[in-house]
Image (tube, rainbow, N blue to C red; front, side, top):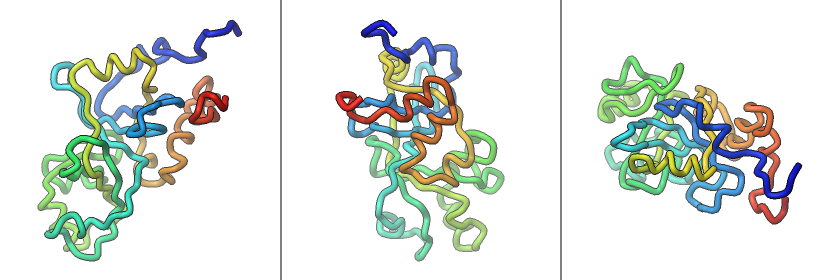
Length: 199
């Protein structure tokens, strides 16, 4: 291989759809600590309004009832850092699309948002357990065309969401798992060290 020729670039991504339900994987050598080796579910993507998503693989050691006084006591919901924006807000991904008004489908069996008061009521009634919902402090956001520019700078890799990525995987292994499953050059990239000087 010729020197200084990248093994991966935006040409690999430019024909992939980017929409609600897409997954963004940070490129292996991402310098930004907020997004290094992150897996992000795109929850909203609009050419004018911009893009919103939540990081799936940054768990935090906090209890929901410590953050939300009105939240049902003793509910051991899994809590993650969704991103550096709006950290005074809670986002949810869940499997209860038919039972939560206002929720939006992301992929088969996974929904975003919905009526939070209704969610708390269903938890108190025992209809929702920690198998059905994940909570995210804050979110990740991009202005219109900002994400497209970052894609062209080879910062992100596009994949598709699956139920098990949110509900059935160890967060610290998720980035590598998805990259390996994509195969080809992505499988090779999954084994890259975070520090390119060690490559």
